[in-house]
Image (cartoon, rainbow, N blue to C red; front, side):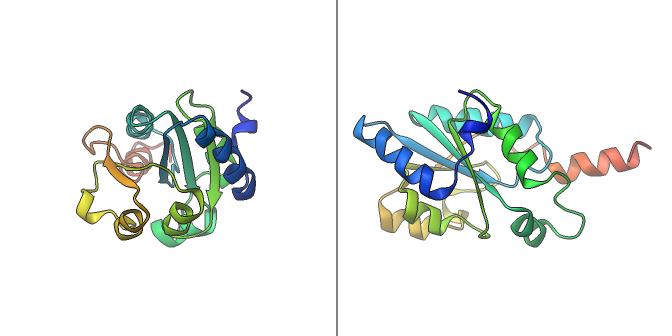
Length: 162
């Protein structure tokens, strides 16, 4: 599958996921800003994909990333972030979303599993209540949080390259 063809609008993705449901495939939703892709992101997405049959990654828009991460962010534009994530072989579909969390996406897309990174616990997942209401399992996946975009940006700035 062509990288860009993995990036879909919400309405397109909803239809495509319906086709996968007819095949009884378990859908996993992961989300994040993915501002500067690093090894922690890759490990999170690989682990999320292992939790089901296909992986949908919801990427925060530029405006929601700015609200979540503050001034100077995102470093990369949403279209570039979406394309980088879509290029990963473990990712089946990517969409960009405007909200600050994925509550509405859980309701709209109805994945079987909502995967979050190890910087969360099941109790601290912001969308936990919505996932529970919809019967969506929350899974904490990936390696310990030793990588962060913020830390990477700081190292670049202090190295004399930034």
